[in-house]
Length: 324
Ligand SMILES: Nc1ncnc2c1ncn2[C@@H]1O[C@H](COP(=O)(O)OP(=O)(O)O)[C@@H](O)[C@H]1O
Ligand SMILES: Cc1ncc(C[n+]2csc(CCOP(=O)(O)OP(=O)(O)O)c2C)c(N)n1
Ligand SMILES: [Mg+2]
Image (cartoon, rainbow, N blue to C red; front, side, top):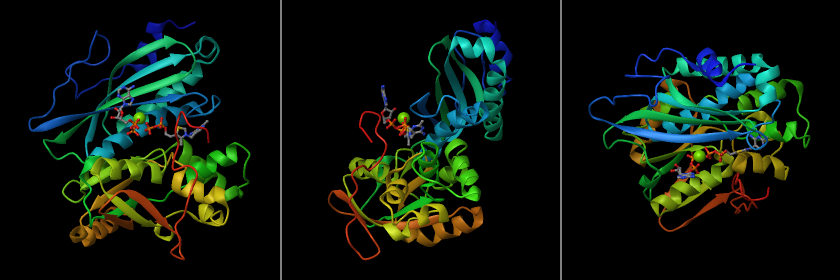
């Protein structure tokens, strides 16, 4: 069986040209570029909570980095360095070395695409658990925060929402999907594409931003609370795929769209004066950016259906300590 140090050496030691010192010592050494601040974020993926234990390991390697890249995107930071802490079941290491290779391949493929260096981590025996910390650089004072929304701002979202949650409902056996839809929805759930370039492009345009990991309503509420403002959004403006649209007559479809989570799109607010510039950015970058509502004075979030009635939902997003 591989030793702890075999695993680190064989699967997780790669050159890190942008670090002073990478994997192999008691700590890595990094140097931030002049005029930048470091953005630091951690997200953990736990078997049974964030993914089914039998999930394809290559996708899992991808997703464990992707969800962290998404936090860099939400801050407008350029991701540079990551650490990876793994708890691995003994049986997996003993019987399924291919799992480690595939996991590392998925992780490093995405890391390479974003020029992120793996500079350290930790490897222990235990129930499958993956924890990535990411460090990025952002120009001093320019990071996009949750607290910058102002009354009068437009509220925007990137891409479309709900496919990942629909895939989860499908995997849990709650709904059926057509053959063509399954692949697309499962890809949204297992291999999200974080909006890293978009996040950096929003600096100077957006007043505030967050990535949608728990669900649009829950995540937008974080912006509203941090900024001490209210908002109104229109449900029919929220961009979703045909698969989600088909389910919108059903409470499950509405839940997937508004509160499903696992989307890893950006939700941001920007002054109305930037509306056209944002539409231009959307065309240039070929990323759908949709204005879904506006920030108002006061507190609370109102969602309106096409008839102008208030939509009420039991849950606004995923909460690890809340049933449903
Ligand atoms: N155990 C913890 N100790 C310290 N800070 C934490 C802990 N868990 C979460 N946080 C911090 O709380 C904030 C909200 O976390 P979270 O909701 O997980 O954000 P995100 O959705 O961006 O991952 C973040 O600033 C995060 O760093
Ligand atoms: C097996 C399984 N159950 C449930 C989910 C749905 N899910 C789990 S965590 C989560 C929200 C995001 O995770 P969290 O740890 O809250 O990330 P953060 O908001 O901190 O980035 C969602 C939608 C899933 N992806 N897989
Ligand atoms: Mg988190």
